[in-house]
Image (tube, rainbow over all chains, first blue to last red; front, side):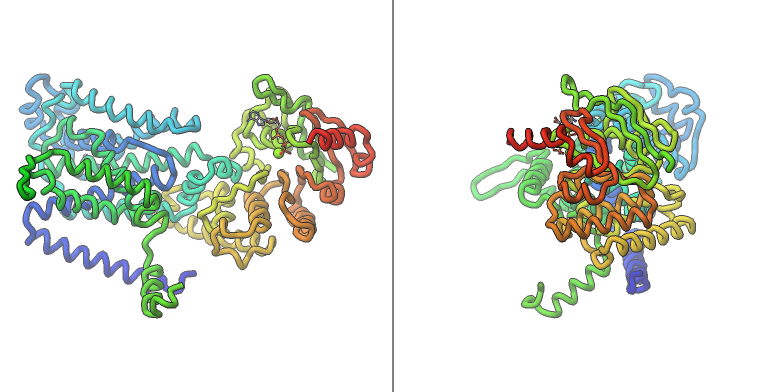
Length: 353
Length: 257
Ligand SMILES: Nc1ncnc2c1ncn2[C@@H]1O[C@H](COP(=O)(O)OP(=O)(O)OP(=O)(O)O)[C@@H](O)[C@H]1O
Ligand SMILES: [Mg+2]
């Protein structure tokens, strides 16, 4: 097989160790603001990788992440909040049984968040994948709105528009980076297995995939459910990071953000999704200044909230026109590619071909 | 010889158009049977009905005594009927070897968790897939292209790869839709030898559609002729060549061209 397998594994371990060391020092030394950016980077990297599994790898256009995030966030928050806390927050309608008595550890609430989210994925996927065509986009888009409306109106479950406050801040750098690592590991391994190849086959040609005996219905379900599971956990982590959630947090913007990330990374590339998530999350912070009031020469420009979204939208449009492949295309980062790249550079540009 | 496959009174209507009507066919194990006819005669439609892509408006399909009507395409593949397509349908961005390995995926026993976490069973099955895929590539003479992208192969090799991929699913009945289309005479000859060899090595029964008459007459033991969805003749290559209705169907086509 691969003669460089040992070397590559060693390099991967070394890279993980470097990241762990950086996180260790950041955990004790970095400012709250920097830590928040790192947390966001890790969560969005994981969300992008799981979203890419259904949209990029399998080629089924879902617009669901914001709904799954909401479901995960509410599920886990309702499970970790203490009964007393819930009694105090639900001032209009008391919270229903059994939520008023239940309290679970954080990790249990995260697993529940993923599972409930995956269950909704299953319920949506069932009718959608039975028929061919782009119904998934429509159904998931509608579902996102339904989730928001339901969250706003089921006062005794979600506390309506007031949302949930005082969620304990369990999420730290170790949780978010651990989650990112686990997602990349799981999805990466899945994509490289024969199941993952079958998912790619479905993206290229569903008819041909059926012809070689691939049950396209179940494989699409599989990708969608796995994607929903990780999005649900991501929602749980997010809830315990920002400690206050409300229905207005989970708008289509979240999905749009993730869509930009996976297109930028290259639809179908797991490592591309990670790279783009880091770029966009960090870029979003770096671009904060465009929404501040500023003065260019004699011009006084008032702060324009939402300006960053305009820039990202333009970026998406430009990419669709000039660089549809994104950063990575459908390729993946690999140490072998890095080494052959270095060798090419050493041989000099003249012999590059 | 025992019967492997039977179609009775197959009929396919698209709205008002009857693409195939009253199609009967019985295949014995080990036979090579040809399906010919002018453009639009309904040949590919017959394949699509057998392989589970179209639901016949009427009629019955039997394979090893089991009724196939109502089964999905992937279920029919797993039962042992594999097909190729008139316009080649490979997975372009996947490597040649991956195209073949995928054909074995439908028969693996590993669960998806086993595959993600590399359980021993999956590791064994993956090695097995790789080994079998390599053997198959050797068999069709594509071993040295194993690591290339399938879209980079020349046309003739893509055809062979598609046939090899179909064989990977472990079929008893192979449906070939115009395998020699677009090939020059020497490639066609090579393909003919290949198909005959594969038939012996894999114990196949073959139903094939082809416009190249020389090819059909040499490879097929029996031929059925369709015109406007209706079977107009059936017999050995010699009988078909002399059949006045067949000559008229083909000459008629030439005149209208
Ligand atoms: N899905 C479909 N919907 C409507 N009409 C169809 C469909 N598939 C095939 N037809 C029609 O059925 C008839 C038979 O088509 P078919 O593809 O089976 O012909 P063929 O014998 O394979 O021809 P060729 O030699 O050109 O491949 C044609 O008139 C075609 O237009
Ligand atoms: Mg045809």
